[in-house]
Length: 273
Image (tube, rainbow, N blue to C red; front, side, top):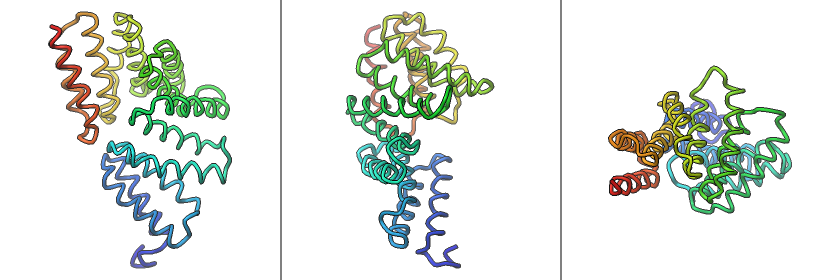
C-alpha cells in the first residue's frame, strides 16, 4: 500500500492498525504499539485530529499499554477515546462502555480503587441496559467490578457479581468451559476472603482443569487462587508452592507487579509453615 499510495495515506494507517491488532492477538503488544502510534500520526495528518477513527486506535493503544503494564500511559488515550465516542454517539454507547471499562482497569492497577469502582458500576448499568439477558461483555464487566469490590473488602458483593458472571458465561459459552475459568476463580477468591476456603476449593479445582494456556493472566490468577485455597485449608503445601511458582512462570515480564505480589505471598505463606 505504501508503494501505491505513499506512507501518509489513511489506507496505510488502517493497514498498520490491523497489523497492530494481529500482533497484540499474537502476544506482541509492544510491537503493536508501534503500529498503533504510526496509525495515529497518519490519521492526524491526513484526516485531522478530531477524526472518529482515532478513537478506535486510541482504545486499542490503551489496551496494549494495559497488556504491557504501562498503566499511567494507558489513561490519556483511553480518556480521548471516551471523549470522542461520547461526542459522536452519546454517553450510553457501547463503545463508551468498552473504553470506560478499559480505563477502569488502568485505575484499578494504579490503585485508584474508588474511581475504578464508580466506572465499573456505570459500565455494568450501561451493558445491562443494552443487552437483554446474558452477554459476554456484561459477564466481563461483572468480573471486573467484582475484582475491584474484593480489593476494597466488599467480598459479599464481589461473590454476588462473580456468581452472576459465571451464570452468564455458562449460558453464552456452554461448550467452552475455558471461558468459565475467570469467574470460577474469582468466586473462589471471594469465598476465601469470606472465610469459606473449603467451599472455594471445588470451583478453583474446576477452573484449574479448564483454564486455557493461551490466556496467561487468567491462568496465573487461577493457579495462585488455588494455591491460596490450599494454604487457607491446610492442604498439600508442596502443591501449594508448585501452583504459586507456576502462576509466576506463566506471566509475561511486563506484569512485574503481579509477579512480585505472588512471590511475596508465597514467601509469607511458607514462613508460616
